[in-house]
Amino acid sequence: MRCSLFAPSHSLGAPRARVVPGGSGVKPTPVPAAGKQWCVAKAEATDAALLANINWACTSGGVDCSPIQEGGACFNPNTARSRAGYVMNAYYQAKGHQDFNCDFSNTGFVTASDPSYGTCKYSA
Picture 1 (cartoon, rainbow, N blue to C red):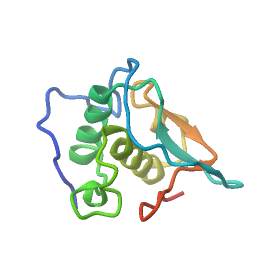
Picture 2 (picture 1 turned 120 degrees about the vertical axis):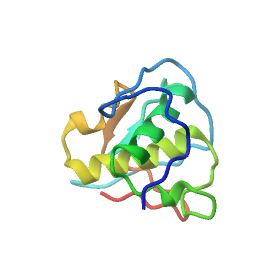
Picture 3 (picture 1 turned 180 degrees about the vertical axis):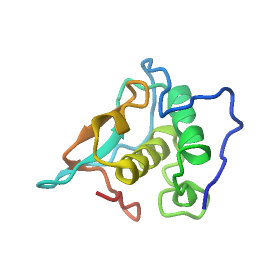
């Protein structure tokens, strides 16, 4: 199921947005996992850039965003950083473990630490 959480402000065409310092929310404690990789948001990525990533991934990137919608396993914490991390990783996993699939205009990076938390499980 594809979702549109935010009205598109412009065409991104590829998983790219601008990065500037910012962001907040609960930070899961990453757990290193041998041989597995995840895509997560950089600490300096702004909420605006992360919301653009969510919008692109959920409308044009082919990501199932139902887990970040209300009632979904990854709805809480209700922050742009948490939700963007989930959808950025979903895109990275679906499109192949290539660094460019996690770039999102330099707002994402690949990690070997599992960012899953509580009921929110990130695929690897």
